[in-house]
Length: 186
Image (tube, rainbow, N blue to C red; front, side):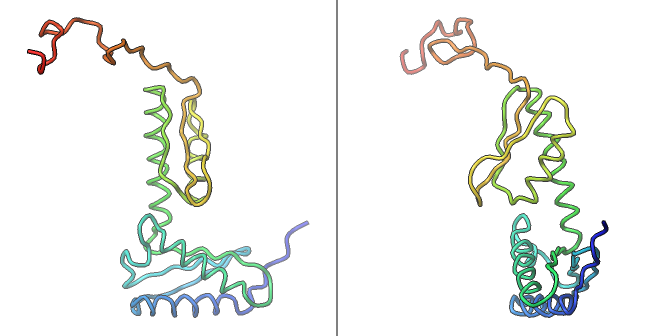
């Protein structure tokens, strides 16, 4: 059976009004807020005098605004709606950056045989990394840690053992040019 169409009621107006009040409090009064709806999602685009202030480091401010706006939109009566907030196509650019990072680290894991742990990410960004890694043969990814410090670990499927080290901690077994003495021992 098809899902019933979502009843947005006054949720779009509530969403835009709430967002404008927060942006004004942030000193961003020259921002245009426009919304579109599909399924149960209110897609909100910010344009104008937004700059990096509304996006924040790695989209943290944008994510926080999205979360708060979603709470405000669902405070009243009616169907649950998801609010997706974007500014200057940040979400698309971030997705492309994360996919590129995943490919680069996957190639590095294949080449070196070593795992790499990324910085903590939100669930949306971790999902992008996992999805990109699933398309690459020979590597796998897993999330580790507890929220909000959950990280993605990218690992080769067949890890290569690290080269053995001798007792002095050197990988090179050739004799030293100075006859084996350290500079301080001369």
